Image 1 (tube, rainbow, N blue to C red):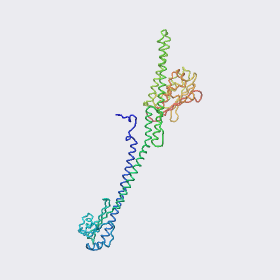
Image 2: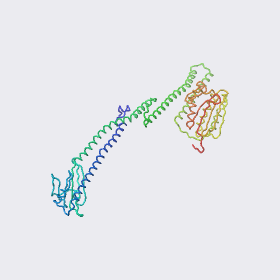
Image 3: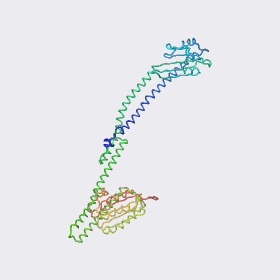
Image 4: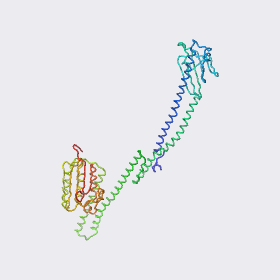
Length: 481
């Protein structure tokens, strides 16, 4: 079921990108803190344990080497020898014979003289091995070390040392506590910084998302301010370019719909007026009826032309793919010139054609025919009686070019950038009289661009009039559709 937040487009915090950023950073911080609270402590503990085991083992070896001067170990002899040695403070010393019976115990509180030393380290020492062990227990570091007492390869007994160090354990505990306090401070600071940083990182995303919603509602003029030079700033720039294109396309669509409606409405209104004149006038003679019907036929033809042009533009906008083939531009221009010769003769316009050989391109013949026909027909229709239309087809480097130059009234400089817009006319009255729809040049240019070409317009370089040039990529040797 859709919630109010979902209808408003708001994402719950724990599902938002900000929460994911924050969680990611917190996990990283947590991992660092775990390492910080374990690795240094383990390293310090290992160093302390290793140091204590080494120290205690060395002390035991010194005592053992001192006791190994005689063939046997006796209680009196061990006590005399131990009296000569300096015992480390806090260290308990046990000396046993070969059967693990305690001959000497330095402890005054728990003296075990005469008992059996049932410790694993003592057993290892009596087998001829040095043994040591260190552990933390009950708030202190407990260290044990045992070495054999040897005389000419024979084990006489064992020396066992035991140390209970609470001070060193307290140092390790203070290190752990300090690390814990530091970790808590770091966690609090990291939490604040993570929330601020994640909000900063997602601010552009939120702004962009809000802008997308506004554009979705039809506000194509909305733009996003681009801050910084990171990927989000590039995304904002791309969004602004996209909305600019959407705005331009929407404006063109609206203008196109308005112009198309106007163009279709004009002949329809004329047809309606003519039919009403016939139907509402009972005394109209047949000659007038024929004249009105002829006018209706002309307007119907005009509607047909507009419809055909609109369909052509629709196909071009849809980007329908058409099978391309080698087309000789000169041959197409010759066909068009032959077809337009009667029209040129009627308009008293001289049509000249000059074609160079080997001007082939990769396209469809119908498309190239439409481009040439639109340019050449306009040059004839909008020329002056006694004028000329010069058509040239030639090759220039890797391009094939069709130029159509007329000697008509020409196109004003301020109108030149707009002549390829749909339904645009320089002289609307004359264009309507000539049967134009204002779509021919737009269709011609869009068709040329489909095949990698383009059409440009400019003044006649030699005299009054206009010159159109359609350029296409020339067909390369061996190139196939």
